[in-house]
Length: 235
Image 1 (cartoon, rainbow, N blue to C red):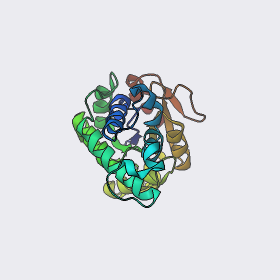
Image 2 (cartoon, helix red, strand yellow; image 1 turned 90 degrees about the vertical axis):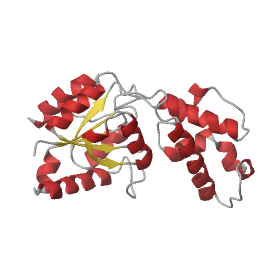
Image 3 (cartoon, rainbow, N blue to C red; image 1 turned 90 degrees about the horizontal axis):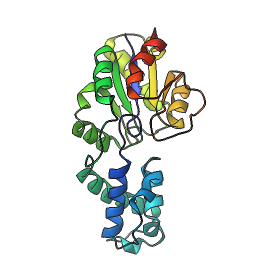
């Protein structure tokens, strides 16, 4: 088997912060909450959905009456915020979100040489929708979102599950697939997940995070570097 390449989505394939932040700002306006500069939401939309809801809509958690309906516990409030946000963000998911320069070409090249899988903390449904809107969905044989399995980053569970699934599909040993698997991502969680799965990793240094996390096997400063780095690691 040539190789199994897991890629993160937000901050690795594309920059979705503006659309995610605009969705949060729109919901605050709908709920009659004090408006904030859209850019102020950027740090909150890159660390998973639970963090986003808690940081972007703290008033709803403190006083559920800002939402329509009766909510008796925090979990119900978060579920309602998830419903509202998913609807609003889905409507504007690619207003400004685009692949990083050179990424579309990079994915096409990688998909011709390797098996590609997506591993992101973005919910699976939203991830698949965005892949379709960006016209890159056909490159990926597997998609693991933050809600696909009981665990998400920095857990290795989706990586290990993907390795097992590809091994079954190809009829080869999982240890062989594992030895030729790489995780590509811009966050420390991506690198830790790879380490937990005992696979190699590449840090996307062009993404959201300016500080390099410890332990990646290689660093890509732009998407066009990924094919060469992957080939070198798997050589």
